[in-house]
Length: 252
Image (cartoon, rainbow, N blue to C red):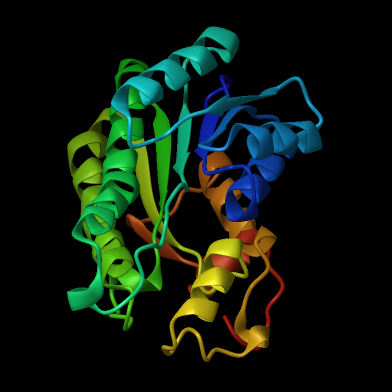
């Protein structure tokens, strides 16, 4: 990556987002971390324990808040050279005929619109530098329907195509784009969803879940040094795991 190692990680107050931020700090990156909840975000920044990370409360679905957040990071550290779009929600959960249509569309505004807003805000500086990386957090749900998760699955399928479009439009201008599938990870979002709707994911054994720092290691590697072919990357790819240096386990 360029010497100017400045990144934004969205949804970074906990879970995978926080672990990505922690690992990027260890790799010498300066960060803006965002989430909607100010208190938990500031607590996360305190846990990072560095002046090289600033907490910015931001709703990624709001273009004005996104533009302001990117300007704050650039004003503090310099142009943003990496973006990790981790923020996302899973609600509403339920059968389609029972869902609140407004909640369904709000999920799209966050899970797809938020990625578009953040990407659009950082791209001008990346284009000018002819260098940058964007990593979008995808899911196996982008390719496999999950009962009760129609909104989430649809958003992740849309995000997968959006990532490919980003790569098609900006790959030739020096911007590297990846759509990363982290596997089944023990996060507050997944654990809460499991308790509220009985489907194949709800019945997964606890041992099948990965700790958040495992996929975070892949993402930090992709941001900092990853030179791999293809937009879509997955923790289930043994070659990627080998490059990252993950210890093998029975189930991914």
